[in-house]
Image (cartoon, rainbow, N blue to C red; front, side, top):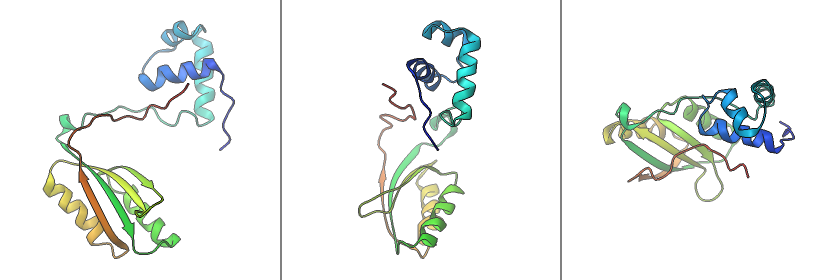
Length: 156
């Protein structure tokens, strides 16, 4: 995808939206110096260009009983495209996996996993790692505290 040319007004609009996607065009317009209609046209263009991928609700894991977060480093048995694609598909299909990165270094993937408790994580580990003959090794760290969690991007 080609990156669209973004001016300072686009960046200011994006900054408002990534803080609160429910901010109405009139409020954004007053902050950036545009009419509501101009803001709406720019937002439409940013969506169509793929700059704005989704507008979602951020849920509280604790409020939903998902009290534990795990960071898992996964090393695959071999790095063939079929093995990597198979693991990607498995990760995409599992709701416990919040984030997945294909990385360089000793691990092949880094996962951020959310579960209600240790027993649920053990079940996750069995189906994701122990039952997968292509997983050579995995190392898990348990998050002690959610110091910073977010998807806001630096726009300056």
